Image 1 (tube, one colour):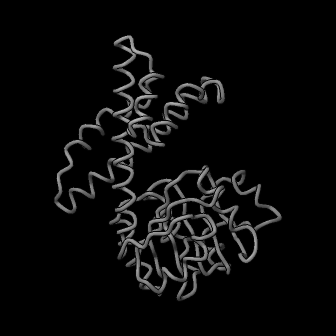
Image 2 (tube, one colour):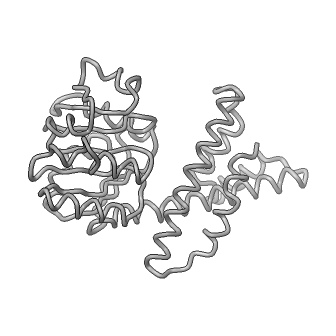
Image 3 (tube, helix red, strand yellow):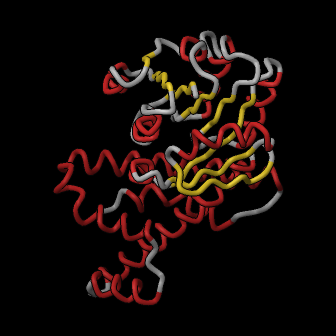
Length: 279
């Protein structure tokens, strides 16, 4: 299978690494030459999305923002300039469902299938081939995409039509950030009240309140500065806060599109940066 992968950063790199081995013929592209350098010898390195499109039947995209996804698909030297009819573009980036639908319409004009294939599980999940992939699109191209998804996913969920996989991811992320805010406030209140945070953690683990995301976040707060240094620790927290704000903004936009109020999410959106950037 001739596959392409655009965006080989924090999570895209381990995803693409799973495709840099048989039965895949991999081509990669990233705006950073340093990001693609590790693939020398195991994959073809393209100079643009259009060049990558000449060598791929299926392309995964894992870049940062809606505008970045739109650019690699539709801009000058974008994928739609060179992909052949019947090709598939899978959007792994977390974007607005409306963005996926707009790009799918642009793809239809070239007989290219644009699907949403949002993923959850982070870099560790990609390395372990245990990502959860949430896919939106018609059954036939989804079936053709499945071998690529299986290379880095443990669970593949076909959510429905175009945009539904991304909507599912936004709903999932919304719950995660609400849980993290609950942990931030619960442990903060415990500390302010003179309680031992370890005891609260033991209670939450025993009664099922401590989620995996909460545990990972608390461990990072305790050990991150030692592992990354102070500057790296705070840079990571700042980046995490930025992703949280983006994802919550997208969830709020989706809620507005479908006419469902999510007042708790509105409140958490206002305080999540302060919470995530606290010690």
